[in-house]
Image 1 (cartoon, rainbow, N blue to C red):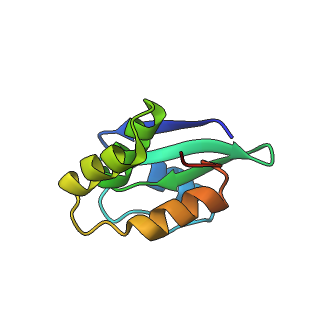
Image 2: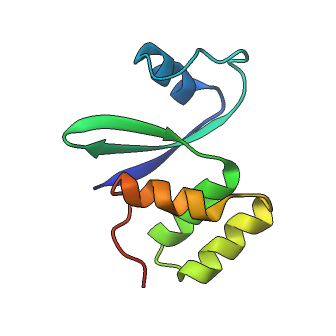
Length: 99
């Protein structure tokens, strides 16, 4: 599955999800957002990401070893639930193997 990180200075990904009836409209449209945009079963999907998760994704995309990528994300967001994050990425076929 091909995926790209999307970043915007306003809540555009949250708005898109709300229009698709997958989320509520954000209460503040002026908050920045980060999301993965990908296709699963030929349908465009959007997954909102925290700052730490986005950092991990970018690091993995740059072929940074997993341990270093996780360190980068956890430095940015110490309470990030890495197990749930990776499980979600595997479930959505955003990653298929970790070496």
